[in-house]
Amino acid sequence: MNYYETLKVSQNASKSEIKSAYRRLARKLHPDKNDGSEQTARAFAAIAEAYEVLGNPEDRANYDKRLLELKIDETLNGDSVFASSNSHARRWRQLVYEHRYNEIIDRMIAEERRESLALQRVIFPTVALFLSTMVVAIFKPQFFSNSAVIGKIVLVSLFAAGVIHLYGRIRDGLDRFTYNDDEIHDSILDDAETRTKPYSRVFAGGILVGGTIGSFGIGLVIGSYVDFVSVSIPAMFSQTLKPEFVFYPPIFVLFVDLVHKFALRAD
Image (cartoon, rainbow, N blue to C red):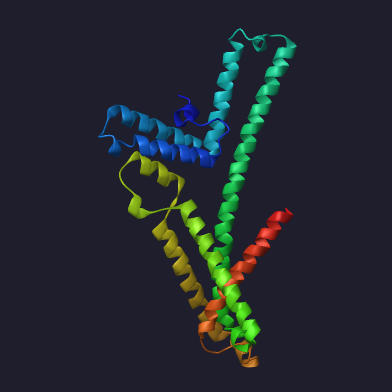
């Protein structure tokens, strides 16, 4: 069975194109929508199997390699001039094989790089949020209170931009790496979908909320022992909790992500 033909995509299709094709066919062939038809169930199982292989970069690379070897074998057993045993034909076959194999490896590396970058876009702001929350709880800065009107406007603007940015990063991360527990049913479709998304949305949300609260708590504990800063500079650092502390973590996340973005472009 040719998995590309099963999903009706080209062999050069991207991961997102394969996923879109799978979802389109899955909605059309899902047993729940076809009164349990045996033929449709077999077709649905076939597209689920195809997506399970082609949706994984490493499995897809191995499958493409086997597919390429089969095509080379067919060529050798056929009447084509490339099936000839002369040195030019052998050299041409080797060049074709190497070119196609390099394409497979390059695509796998590109897919893995995209996955790595997507993961970094979630990890960096999350770690920055936890770290900045802890630092704010330790030192309790009063930059907003000590700023002039223009400074307060700038801080509020940066806070708004940081919240929007952080929300976008979290939303994209949840969409890409988590599945919704409410949408899980006992079907092949959901089983295949959850395998590509290793974490539940509830679990990820719990880690995010728990990590933020935990970081704040740890910061308060450390701050209770390291209070020399607030004592030395009481105008800049408070000894008590203030509402303005909520401003600083999103702003820090925004700047960390900007630095990360520039670093990636420099590479």
